[in-house]
Image (cartoon, rainbow, N blue to C red; front, side):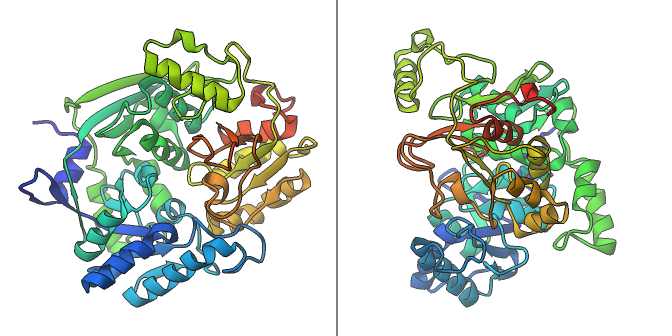
Length: 468
Protein backbone atom coordinates (compact mmCIF):
# COMPACT_ATOMS: atom_id res chain seq x y z
CA UNK A 1 0.00 0.00 0.00
CA UNK A 2 1.49 3.39 -0.99
CA UNK A 3 2.65 5.42 2.00
CA UNK A 4 3.37 9.06 2.76
CA UNK A 5 6.84 10.19 3.73
CA UNK A 6 5.43 11.23 7.10
CA UNK A 7 4.20 7.67 7.71
CA UNK A 8 7.58 6.25 6.76
CA UNK A 9 9.54 8.52 9.09
CA UNK A 10 7.07 8.09 11.95
CA UNK A 11 6.98 4.30 11.65
CA UNK A 12 10.78 4.09 11.46
CA UNK A 13 10.97 5.88 14.81
CA UNK A 14 8.03 4.18 16.52
CA UNK A 15 9.16 2.52 19.76
CA UNK A 16 5.85 1.51 21.37
CA UNK A 17 2.15 2.30 21.62
CA UNK A 18 0.82 3.40 24.99
CA UNK A 19 -2.50 2.45 26.55
CA UNK A 20 -3.57 6.14 26.52
CA UNK A 21 -3.44 6.23 22.71
CA UNK A 22 -0.13 8.04 22.44
CA UNK A 23 2.88 6.57 20.69
CA UNK A 24 6.51 6.71 21.79
CA UNK A 25 8.68 8.17 19.05
CA UNK A 26 12.47 8.03 19.19
CA UNK A 27 14.16 11.43 18.82
CA UNK A 28 17.44 11.41 16.89
CA UNK A 29 18.79 14.74 18.10
CA UNK A 30 17.41 17.68 20.00
CA UNK A 31 18.33 21.26 20.77
CA UNK A 32 17.65 23.29 23.91
CA UNK A 33 17.59 27.04 24.43
CA UNK A 34 18.13 29.04 27.59
CA UNK A 35 14.63 30.46 28.02
CA UNK A 36 13.09 27.06 28.83
CA UNK A 37 15.89 24.54 29.33
CA UNK A 38 16.62 25.45 32.94
CA UNK A 39 13.16 24.22 33.98
CA UNK A 40 13.86 20.83 32.40
CA UNK A 41 17.27 20.67 34.06
CA UNK A 42 15.67 21.43 37.42
CA UNK A 43 13.09 18.69 36.94
CA UNK A 44 15.75 16.14 36.07
CA UNK A 45 17.73 17.09 39.15
CA UNK A 46 14.67 16.72 41.41
CA UNK A 47 13.88 13.34 39.87
CA UNK A 48 17.55 12.30 40.07
CA UNK A 49 17.50 11.29 36.43
CA UNK A 50 20.43 11.78 34.03
CA UNK A 51 20.25 12.98 30.44
CA UNK A 52 20.07 9.69 28.55
CA UNK A 53 22.02 10.77 25.45
CA UNK A 54 24.02 13.93 26.06
CA UNK A 55 25.86 13.20 22.81
CA UNK A 56 22.60 13.76 20.91
CA UNK A 57 21.65 16.86 22.90
CA UNK A 58 22.75 20.44 22.19
CA UNK A 59 22.21 23.81 23.87
CA UNK A 60 21.94 27.28 22.35
CA UNK A 61 22.00 30.71 23.94
CA UNK A 62 19.60 32.68 21.74
CA UNK A 63 16.36 34.06 23.23
CA UNK A 64 17.64 36.40 25.94
CA UNK A 65 21.09 37.30 24.59
CA UNK A 66 21.94 40.90 23.78
CA UNK A 67 22.58 41.76 20.15
CA UNK A 68 24.84 44.70 21.01
CA UNK A 69 28.48 44.53 19.82
CA UNK A 70 30.81 43.46 22.61
CA UNK A 71 27.96 41.80 24.50
CA UNK A 72 28.43 39.77 27.68
CA UNK A 73 26.22 38.03 30.24
CA UNK A 74 25.15 41.31 31.81
CA UNK A 75 24.49 43.28 28.62
CA UNK A 76 20.80 42.52 29.09
CA UNK A 77 20.50 42.13 32.88
CA UNK A 78 17.12 40.35 32.77
CA UNK A 79 18.64 37.58 30.67
CA UNK A 80 21.75 36.96 32.77
CA UNK A 81 20.12 34.36 35.02
CA UNK A 82 18.86 32.35 32.03
CA UNK A 83 22.27 32.42 30.37
CA UNK A 84 24.07 31.28 33.52
CA UNK A 85 21.51 28.56 34.25
CA UNK A 86 21.88 27.20 30.72
CA UNK A 87 25.65 27.20 31.08
CA UNK A 88 25.56 25.37 34.39
CA UNK A 89 22.87 22.87 33.34
CA UNK A 90 24.69 22.03 30.13
CA UNK A 91 27.99 21.59 31.96
CA UNK A 92 26.42 19.41 34.66
CA UNK A 93 24.82 17.15 32.07
CA UNK A 94 27.70 16.98 29.60
CA UNK A 95 25.84 18.80 26.82
CA UNK A 96 27.57 20.72 24.03
CA UNK A 97 26.71 24.39 24.52
CA UNK A 98 26.92 27.09 21.87
CA UNK A 99 27.67 29.91 24.28
CA UNK A 100 27.89 33.66 23.71
CA UNK A 101 31.52 33.55 22.65
CA UNK A 102 31.24 30.40 20.55
CA UNK A 103 32.06 30.93 16.84
CA UNK A 104 28.95 28.88 15.97
CA UNK A 105 26.50 30.49 18.45
CA UNK A 106 23.09 31.40 17.13
CA UNK A 107 19.37 30.71 17.03
CA UNK A 108 18.68 27.03 17.63
CA UNK A 109 16.64 26.63 14.42
CA UNK A 110 19.45 28.23 12.41
CA UNK A 111 22.53 26.53 13.80
CA UNK A 112 21.07 23.00 13.94
CA UNK A 113 20.67 22.72 10.16
CA UNK A 114 23.72 24.77 9.22
CA UNK A 115 25.92 22.49 11.33
CA UNK A 116 24.35 19.34 9.89
CA UNK A 117 22.76 18.22 13.16
CA UNK A 118 19.41 17.73 11.44
CA UNK A 119 19.27 15.21 8.61
CA UNK A 120 16.68 13.97 6.09
CA UNK A 121 14.28 11.45 7.56
CA UNK A 122 15.43 12.18 11.11
CA UNK A 123 13.40 13.29 14.11
CA UNK A 124 14.24 16.45 16.01
CA UNK A 125 12.78 18.21 19.05
CA UNK A 126 13.12 21.72 20.46
CA UNK A 127 11.28 23.40 23.37
CA UNK A 128 10.13 26.09 20.93
CA UNK A 129 7.09 26.26 18.69
CA UNK A 130 9.07 26.90 15.50
CA UNK A 131 10.96 23.61 15.66
CA UNK A 132 9.62 22.53 12.26
CA UNK A 133 11.87 25.12 10.57
CA UNK A 134 14.34 22.31 9.98
CA UNK A 135 11.68 20.45 8.00
CA UNK A 136 13.23 22.27 5.06
CA UNK A 137 15.78 19.43 5.07
CA UNK A 138 13.15 16.70 5.08
CA UNK A 139 13.27 16.10 8.83
CA UNK A 140 10.32 15.57 11.16
CA UNK A 141 10.67 18.11 13.97
CA UNK A 142 8.45 18.82 16.95
CA UNK A 143 8.12 21.74 19.30
CA UNK A 144 7.55 20.62 22.88
CA UNK A 145 6.83 21.96 26.33
CA UNK A 146 9.10 21.77 29.37
CA UNK A 147 7.51 18.56 30.67
CA UNK A 148 7.89 16.92 27.26
CA UNK A 149 11.50 18.07 27.00
CA UNK A 150 12.25 16.63 30.43
CA UNK A 151 10.86 13.30 29.21
CA UNK A 152 12.94 13.49 26.02
CA UNK A 153 16.11 14.30 27.94
CA UNK A 154 15.54 11.32 30.25
CA UNK A 155 14.34 8.77 27.69
CA UNK A 156 15.25 10.04 24.18
CA UNK A 157 11.56 9.63 23.26
CA UNK A 158 8.51 11.83 22.90
CA UNK A 159 4.98 10.60 23.65
CA UNK A 160 2.48 11.85 21.06
CA UNK A 161 -0.81 10.96 19.49
CA UNK A 162 -0.16 10.17 15.85
CA UNK A 163 -0.95 13.29 13.79
CA UNK A 164 -2.96 13.30 10.58
CA UNK A 165 -1.25 14.00 7.26
CA UNK A 166 -1.74 16.99 4.97
CA UNK A 167 -0.35 17.67 1.51
CA UNK A 168 0.01 21.26 0.30
CA UNK A 169 0.94 21.49 -3.37
CA UNK A 170 2.65 24.73 -4.35
CA UNK A 171 2.48 25.07 -8.10
CA UNK A 172 3.69 27.65 -10.60
CA UNK A 173 6.68 29.94 -10.65
CA UNK A 174 7.27 32.73 -8.14
CA UNK A 175 7.47 36.23 -9.54
CA UNK A 176 10.19 38.80 -8.98
CA UNK A 177 10.72 39.70 -5.30
CA UNK A 178 8.25 37.02 -4.18
CA UNK A 179 9.67 34.38 -1.83
CA UNK A 180 8.80 31.56 0.54
CA UNK A 181 7.71 34.07 3.20
CA UNK A 182 5.03 35.39 0.88
CA UNK A 183 3.95 31.85 0.00
CA UNK A 184 3.71 30.85 3.66
CA UNK A 185 1.68 33.92 4.59
CA UNK A 186 -0.70 33.28 1.70
CA UNK A 187 -1.18 29.63 2.75
CA UNK A 188 -2.02 30.71 6.32
CA UNK A 189 -4.44 33.31 4.96
CA UNK A 190 -6.13 30.66 2.80
CA UNK A 191 -6.56 27.86 5.36
CA UNK A 192 -6.56 29.87 8.59
CA UNK A 193 -4.57 29.87 11.80
CA UNK A 194 -5.97 26.48 12.79
CA UNK A 195 -6.34 24.96 9.32
CA UNK A 196 -3.54 22.44 9.84
CA UNK A 197 -4.30 21.65 13.49
CA UNK A 198 -3.44 18.06 14.32
CA UNK A 199 -1.61 17.52 11.02
CA UNK A 200 1.93 17.05 9.78
CA UNK A 201 2.20 18.94 6.50
CA UNK A 202 4.21 17.93 3.46
CA UNK A 203 4.90 20.81 1.08
CA UNK A 204 5.29 19.65 -2.51
CA UNK A 205 4.85 20.89 -6.07
CA UNK A 206 6.99 22.77 -8.56
CA UNK A 207 7.19 26.00 -6.54
CA UNK A 208 8.35 24.16 -3.41
CA UNK A 209 10.97 22.20 -5.38
CA UNK A 210 12.32 25.39 -6.93
CA UNK A 211 12.93 26.97 -3.52
CA UNK A 212 16.51 27.02 -2.21
CA UNK A 213 16.93 25.14 1.08
CA UNK A 214 16.90 28.33 3.16
CA UNK A 215 13.53 29.30 1.69
CA UNK A 216 12.18 25.83 2.37
CA UNK A 217 13.12 26.43 6.01
CA UNK A 218 11.21 29.71 5.98
CA UNK A 219 8.18 27.89 4.57
CA UNK A 220 8.34 25.21 7.27
CA UNK A 221 9.03 27.78 9.99
CA UNK A 222 5.54 29.22 9.61
CA UNK A 223 3.86 25.81 9.72
CA UNK A 224 2.92 26.29 13.39
CA UNK A 225 1.12 29.54 12.53
CA UNK A 226 -1.62 27.52 10.82
CA UNK A 227 -1.71 25.01 13.67
CA UNK A 228 0.48 22.32 12.10
CA UNK A 229 2.18 19.82 14.40
CA UNK A 230 5.15 19.66 12.03
CA UNK A 231 5.93 20.34 8.40
CA UNK A 232 8.56 19.41 5.86
CA UNK A 233 9.65 19.39 2.23
CA UNK A 234 10.74 15.99 0.96
CA UNK A 235 14.54 15.86 0.50
CA UNK A 236 16.10 15.95 -2.97
CA UNK A 237 19.50 16.45 -4.58
CA UNK A 238 19.49 20.12 -3.58
CA UNK A 239 19.09 19.01 0.05
CA UNK A 240 21.98 16.58 -0.15
CA UNK A 241 24.30 19.11 -1.78
CA UNK A 242 23.43 21.67 0.90
CA UNK A 243 24.25 19.21 3.70
CA UNK A 244 27.47 17.79 2.26
CA UNK A 245 30.51 18.51 4.41
CA UNK A 246 28.68 20.11 7.31
CA UNK A 247 30.32 19.35 10.69
CA UNK A 248 27.70 17.02 12.21
CA UNK A 249 26.61 15.40 8.93
CA UNK A 250 27.91 11.92 8.06
CA UNK A 251 31.32 11.79 6.41
CA UNK A 252 33.10 9.39 4.05
CA UNK A 253 31.56 5.93 3.74
CA UNK A 254 28.82 6.88 6.23
CA UNK A 255 27.80 9.73 3.93
CA UNK A 256 27.48 7.31 1.00
CA UNK A 257 25.35 4.93 3.07
CA UNK A 258 23.17 7.78 4.32
CA UNK A 259 22.74 9.18 0.82
CA UNK A 260 21.49 5.83 -0.47
CA UNK A 261 18.79 5.82 2.22
CA UNK A 262 17.90 9.51 1.85
CA UNK A 263 17.22 9.04 -1.86
CA UNK A 264 14.38 6.66 -0.95
CA UNK A 265 12.66 9.27 1.25
CA UNK A 266 9.56 10.33 -0.62
CA UNK A 267 5.83 9.87 -0.56
CA UNK A 268 4.78 7.04 -2.86
CA UNK A 269 2.67 7.68 -5.93
CA UNK A 270 -0.93 7.20 -4.89
CA UNK A 271 -0.25 7.78 -1.18
CA UNK A 272 -3.35 8.99 0.64
CA UNK A 273 -3.32 12.15 2.75
CA UNK A 274 -6.03 13.07 5.21
CA UNK A 275 -6.25 16.58 3.76
CA UNK A 276 -4.95 18.21 0.57
CA UNK A 277 -4.65 21.82 -0.60
CA UNK A 278 -3.20 23.44 -3.72
CA UNK A 279 -1.89 26.99 -4.13
CA UNK A 280 -1.04 28.46 -7.52
CA UNK A 281 1.90 30.75 -6.80
CA UNK A 282 2.25 32.18 -10.32
CA UNK A 283 0.31 35.39 -9.68
CA UNK A 284 1.32 35.83 -6.05
CA UNK A 285 2.52 39.30 -5.10
CA UNK A 286 4.48 40.26 -1.95
CA UNK A 287 2.30 39.60 1.10
CA UNK A 288 1.89 41.49 4.36
CA UNK A 289 -0.18 41.01 7.51
CA UNK A 290 -2.65 43.76 8.34
CA UNK A 291 -3.96 42.40 11.65
CA UNK A 292 -2.86 40.69 14.84
CA UNK A 293 -2.53 37.06 13.79
CA UNK A 294 -0.58 35.61 10.86
CA UNK A 295 -3.74 34.65 8.96
CA UNK A 296 -4.81 38.29 8.58
CA UNK A 297 -2.92 38.82 5.34
CA UNK A 298 -3.30 40.67 2.06
CA UNK A 299 -1.20 41.41 -0.99
CA UNK A 300 0.95 44.51 -0.82
CA UNK A 301 -1.33 46.28 -3.33
CA UNK A 302 -4.47 45.36 -1.40
CA UNK A 303 -6.84 47.21 0.88
CA UNK A 304 -7.65 46.54 4.52
CA UNK A 305 -10.73 44.28 4.65
CA UNK A 306 -14.08 45.20 6.15
CA UNK A 307 -15.24 43.13 9.15
CA UNK A 308 -18.71 43.26 7.65
CA UNK A 309 -17.44 40.80 5.02
CA UNK A 310 -16.76 38.15 7.69
CA UNK A 311 -18.81 34.97 7.43
CA UNK A 312 -19.41 34.60 11.16
CA UNK A 313 -19.67 36.74 14.27
CA UNK A 314 -16.49 35.59 15.97
CA UNK A 315 -14.40 36.35 12.91
CA UNK A 316 -16.04 39.74 12.57
CA UNK A 317 -15.21 40.54 16.20
CA UNK A 318 -11.60 39.39 15.72
CA UNK A 319 -11.23 41.61 12.67
CA UNK A 320 -12.70 44.61 14.49
CA UNK A 321 -10.35 44.04 17.41
CA UNK A 322 -7.35 43.75 15.08
CA UNK A 323 -8.26 46.94 13.23
CA UNK A 324 -8.57 48.78 16.53
CA UNK A 325 -5.19 47.60 17.76
CA UNK A 326 -3.45 48.28 14.44
CA UNK A 327 -5.03 51.73 14.02
CA UNK A 328 -6.50 50.89 10.61
CA UNK A 329 -9.80 51.48 8.83
CA UNK A 330 -11.56 49.19 6.34
CA UNK A 331 -10.74 50.02 2.75
CA UNK A 332 -7.39 51.68 3.47
CA UNK A 333 -4.50 50.78 1.18
CA UNK A 334 -1.80 49.00 3.15
CA UNK A 335 1.06 50.41 1.05
CA UNK A 336 2.00 53.92 2.08
CA UNK A 337 1.33 53.57 5.81
CA UNK A 338 4.14 55.32 7.74
CA UNK A 339 6.70 52.99 9.33
CA UNK A 340 8.63 53.69 12.53
CA UNK A 341 10.72 50.54 12.88
CA UNK A 342 11.99 47.75 10.64
CA UNK A 343 13.44 44.44 11.81
CA UNK A 344 15.21 41.91 9.58
CA UNK A 345 16.08 38.71 11.43
CA UNK A 346 14.66 35.79 13.48
CA UNK A 347 14.56 32.05 12.78
CA UNK A 348 12.20 32.84 9.91
CA UNK A 349 14.39 35.14 7.82
CA UNK A 350 17.94 35.60 9.13
CA UNK A 351 20.01 33.27 6.95
CA UNK A 352 22.62 34.47 4.49
CA UNK A 353 20.34 34.49 1.39
CA UNK A 354 17.78 36.53 3.35
CA UNK A 355 20.41 39.13 4.18
CA UNK A 356 21.77 39.09 0.63
CA UNK A 357 18.31 39.76 -0.80
CA UNK A 358 17.69 42.63 1.64
CA UNK A 359 21.14 44.11 0.98
CA UNK A 360 20.45 44.14 -2.76
CA UNK A 361 17.47 46.41 -2.08
CA UNK A 362 19.33 48.62 0.40
CA UNK A 363 22.63 49.03 -1.45
CA UNK A 364 23.31 52.67 -2.34
CA UNK A 365 20.26 53.92 -0.45
CA UNK A 366 19.56 55.18 3.06
CA UNK A 367 16.98 54.47 5.72
CA UNK A 368 14.25 57.12 5.77
CA UNK A 369 14.49 59.78 8.44
CA UNK A 370 12.83 58.77 11.69
CA UNK A 371 12.94 55.02 10.98
CA UNK A 372 14.85 52.69 13.30
CA UNK A 373 16.12 49.77 11.22
CA UNK A 374 17.84 46.63 12.51
CA UNK A 375 19.48 43.59 10.95
CA UNK A 376 20.31 40.68 13.27
CA UNK A 377 21.92 37.59 11.67
CA UNK A 378 20.57 34.21 12.77
CA UNK A 379 23.95 32.83 13.74
CA UNK A 380 27.53 33.90 14.23
CA UNK A 381 28.36 31.78 11.18
CA UNK A 382 25.84 33.74 9.10
CA UNK A 383 27.20 37.00 10.48
CA UNK A 384 30.76 36.01 9.61
CA UNK A 385 29.77 35.02 6.06
CA UNK A 386 27.79 38.23 5.58
CA UNK A 387 30.69 40.35 6.76
CA UNK A 388 33.04 38.50 4.42
CA UNK A 389 30.77 39.65 1.56
CA UNK A 390 30.62 43.20 2.93
CA UNK A 391 26.90 43.05 3.66
CA UNK A 392 27.41 44.59 7.09
CA UNK A 393 28.90 47.68 5.42
CA UNK A 394 25.95 47.88 3.03
CA UNK A 395 23.51 47.90 5.92
CA UNK A 396 25.56 50.21 8.15
CA UNK A 397 26.13 52.70 5.34
CA UNK A 398 22.38 52.75 4.80
CA UNK A 399 21.71 53.51 8.47
CA UNK A 400 20.81 50.06 9.76
CA UNK A 401 21.96 48.66 13.11
CA UNK A 402 24.05 45.51 12.53
CA UNK A 403 23.76 43.19 15.51
CA UNK A 404 25.22 40.07 17.05
CA UNK A 405 23.23 36.91 16.40
CA UNK A 406 20.18 35.93 18.43
CA UNK A 407 16.38 35.92 18.47
CA UNK A 408 16.32 39.66 19.16
CA UNK A 409 13.14 41.50 18.33
CA UNK A 410 11.11 38.43 17.32
CA UNK A 411 9.58 38.25 20.80
CA UNK A 412 11.67 40.97 22.43
CA UNK A 413 13.02 38.55 25.04
CA UNK A 414 16.37 40.30 25.05
CA UNK A 415 15.15 43.87 25.35
CA UNK A 416 15.07 44.63 21.60
CA UNK A 417 11.55 46.04 21.50
CA UNK A 418 9.58 48.80 19.88
CA UNK A 419 7.90 51.76 21.55
CA UNK A 420 4.13 52.00 22.18
CA UNK A 421 2.23 53.02 19.07
CA UNK A 422 5.08 52.30 16.67
CA UNK A 423 4.30 50.58 13.40
CA UNK A 424 6.92 47.88 12.85
CA UNK A 425 7.61 46.01 9.62
CA UNK A 426 9.21 42.72 10.58
CA UNK A 427 10.49 39.52 8.97
CA UNK A 428 9.48 37.50 12.03
CA UNK A 429 6.69 34.92 12.36
CA UNK A 430 4.16 36.41 14.78
CA UNK A 431 2.27 39.68 14.83
CA UNK A 432 0.34 39.16 18.07
CA UNK A 433 -0.60 42.15 20.18
CA UNK A 434 2.32 43.42 22.29
CA UNK A 435 4.69 40.73 20.99
CA UNK A 436 7.38 43.18 19.87
CA UNK A 437 6.67 45.61 22.67
CA UNK A 438 3.59 47.07 24.43
CA UNK A 439 1.16 48.50 21.86
CA UNK A 440 3.62 47.90 18.99
CA UNK A 441 1.83 47.30 15.68
CA UNK A 442 3.62 44.57 13.74
CA UNK A 443 3.33 43.78 10.04
CA UNK A 444 4.94 40.51 8.90
CA UNK A 445 6.75 40.61 5.56
CA UNK A 446 9.66 39.16 3.60
CA UNK A 447 13.22 40.57 3.85
CA UNK A 448 12.96 42.54 0.60
CA UNK A 449 9.67 44.13 1.59
CA UNK A 450 11.15 45.03 4.98
CA UNK A 451 14.21 46.56 3.32
CA UNK A 452 12.11 48.55 0.85
CA UNK A 453 9.89 49.85 3.67
CA UNK A 454 12.91 50.98 5.69
CA UNK A 455 14.18 52.97 2.71
CA UNK A 456 10.79 54.44 1.84
CA UNK A 457 9.79 55.18 5.44
CA UNK A 458 6.42 53.58 4.70
CA UNK A 459 5.07 50.19 3.78
CA UNK A 460 6.41 49.76 0.27
CA UNK A 461 6.09 47.42 -2.69
CA UNK A 462 9.69 46.54 -3.45
CA UNK A 463 8.75 46.07 -7.12
CA UNK A 464 8.00 49.78 -7.32
CA UNK A 465 11.24 50.91 -5.67
CA UNK A 466 13.31 52.35 -8.50
CA UNK A 467 16.19 50.09 -9.46
CA UNK A 468 15.23 47.28 -7.07
